Amino acid sequence: MSFTLKRAISIVLVMAVLLGMVNALAAGTTTDPLISRNYLEGTYRTSLRSGIDIALAPVITAERNRLAEINRDSVGFTFAPMFNGISADSLNNIVLRSGASFTMTSGTATININRGTVINLSTGRAVTSGSQLARNERYFCAENTTATIVASSSLVGYVDGYHKIELRPTSPPASPPPSTSTSRPPSTSSSSTNPSSQRGIQGFVTRLYVEGLGRNPDRGGLNHWMSILENGGSGTTVAHVIIFSTEMQRRNLSNADFVEVLYRSLLGRNSDLAGRTFWINRLNSGASRVSVFYGFTNSPEFGQISSAHGIRR
Image (cartoon, rainbow, N blue to C red):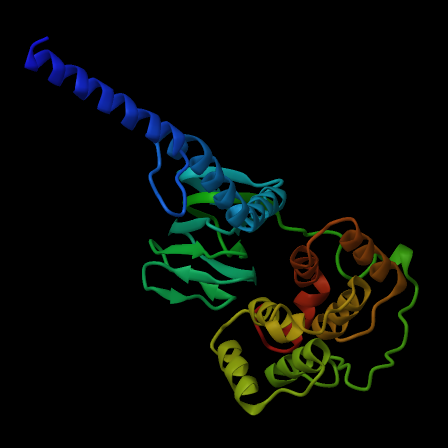
């Protein structure tokens, strides 16, 4: 046998021994960390994936719950994946929710923030509820936000994200029809103010604080809102900001108490049985508090009270 052939056989035998050692130590040991490809792709990868799944389970569950909440809150809304043209007038509101944005190109409107934060992306600033919309500026609803665009005249613009057109309630008026109410309960609240005995802008703002927030107005707040109304601001807008303020929300009023607050703060009187029952039933049936609020401010009675106080409805 030649030297070359012997050398080849020796190499083959050595390789066979090494291969057997690798197979024997496929998973590795504490003294010999040699790990095979089969171990890496089998036992180790399976164990690693299991560990990752366990670590990520709480995060995945939370995100799934969040998606379920988004889908639930979006019932009744239309989703626009890109800017769609939209229009509204004084009979309709445009309701926006988290992630939606709106740009008004013509018309006049205010934006009322029901919850959360709206950012004017054109200026980079947060928007105050009740603010007038500026044309050609983009308003964006941050997370957990719902906002309502209230048109003062016919408006045209563009919207993306979840939105809907909501008919602005105009009837019945906050006061019940004469045929369903022959008398009104006498006022039992010492702070409830009748416009005939206390007129003027100061009386209007004071009543919103006393009946809406349960306290007398601070001097700074009183002067601020009086200045807005004296310069042509809307009584509806001022009332909306106060009634839907964070301070008001902290009172956690029931539907019945909320309706009573609207009667006292907006109309300056206690509720009557027919009107109170009607609005409570609306709320209990799923109507939003914002829509009920506009039912009051769109009523002839509130229009008369606004005139009596010398303010624009």
